Length: 317
Image (cartoon, helix red, strand yellow):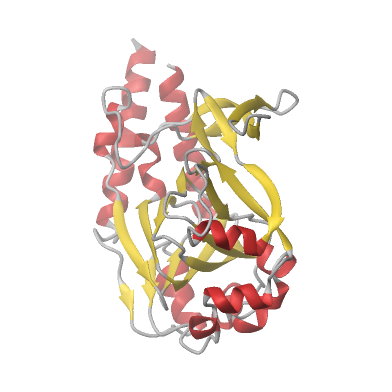
């Protein structure tokens, strides 16, 4: 009897978290700023309350907005061998066949990758430059001068430089599955569009996690893909749900979640706060650069950890 009352209290608490968070100021659409904020304003109005926004006129001065055409990239990067994520279905780092499947990391000349994106060469597979280890500075240093090594007002607001600056270019079939990051993320679209579906951290009770055997796509001799288990690796917690087509019979709690959707266009910057869940699609050939700043492991992080622990405890019961 006491256990039942305790579980009921946990369930009521979890139901109240998202509602109270929305009442405290999370809107039903992503706000736009028509200019980059001051460091103090940005920290006070957006970072501290953990609220996303789309910032316009923040990167208009970047040469990349005009220079990064296919012809320019071919000239500057050319035959240089780069890392490209290749999958049979467009889903890298996602749940498939009861595995957490990572892409084949193929080393290939950049011009060959561009030929596939521009459909000069056909391939049944999906190609995406998306290596998230500061690949702009590590693999594409030739392009850094066309953007910025950091975002000055963000660096001043947080008192630190970014941990990583990443370059993204790929096909429209490339999809980023729903997940969260422990970073304050400034996502800048250079050309094309990015389509984001977002959930605040307070939606955690409605978002399912499971543990999955990690695996990697590997090309067989006949050119098809096989899924190879990484048997020495620990299981990976990941979200099996597709928020665009959720299986509510399997995950009925997700019906209570409140996703936000937004499109970030060329020349715009999305501030994606730490621990926000996000699912990403893009227009074909979209180019973007993002800046990852390590989050502060403060009260917000403790709040999320509590929410996560309570959600897991209720599931186990």
